[in-house]
Amino acid sequence: MTALALSLILAAAVIHASWNYFLKRSGGGAVFVWLFASLSALIYLPLAALIIWWEKPEFGWVHYGLMFASAVLHTAYYLLLDRGYRSGDLSVVYPLARGTGPLITVLCAVLLLGEHPTAVAIAGALLIGGGAIALTGDPRKLKQSGNLPAVGFALLTGCMIACYTLVDKVAVAAWLIPPLVQDWAANLGRVLLMTPMALKRKAEIAPTWRRARKDILAVAVLCPLSYILVLTAMVFTPVSYVAPAREVSILFAALMGTQLLLEGQVGRRSAC
Image 1 (cartoon, helix red, strand yellow):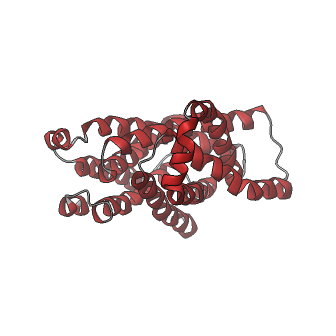
Image 2: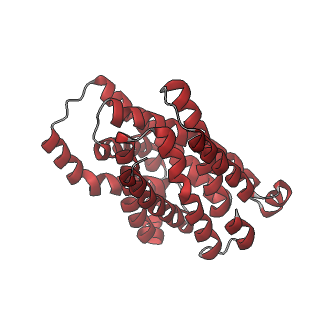
């Protein structure tokens, strides 16, 4: 992995943990997810349009299919992640979701994309997964603290992470969709997919905005930015390296959960 790729991934990790903190702090909800996705689509529209105008990429049905697939998978990811945060602690849900994703991604990258990660890369992915499991703690205590249902949502979120990572790797590396355009198109698709759901809950839109507009704005800016940096790294770096490396964000999220949200077990979770 090059120094540039590593720098992009580390920056993305800090930003990613930050927007997850804002999502957890806000209380979330499907309307919250729809609002920040809508704002993201508006905020990043000028940049996406500029890139399309400058690079003039030629899109066919495969390109649009990859964008749509990414939109569907990301929609499921955000809804599952939000449910996880509303069911349990950030310092439990985030590490478990982010820790299981790379394990599945590396396996699929080898089987489906023909990548050949080194033993060190494989060991790193296994260590991340093991650390994530350690962070969740004793299952009996999870049940007592009310975090056990969140574990299920976290594991499903990890599956979605692996799926959209592989789709987006193919999109930006094999079909040469500009990273920012791929993320923006997937985000726009997510808005369209979630709009019927939001309209059914239109009475919640104004109260959610009043309650959490600062968090909505923060996530709207930071969420796409973190993933655009990762997609840029994936253009010239095997996904079996990128996926495990970006999970250094687990450390930042665990610290935010214990220090800023006061979720407890600071010593054990920091050690993990």
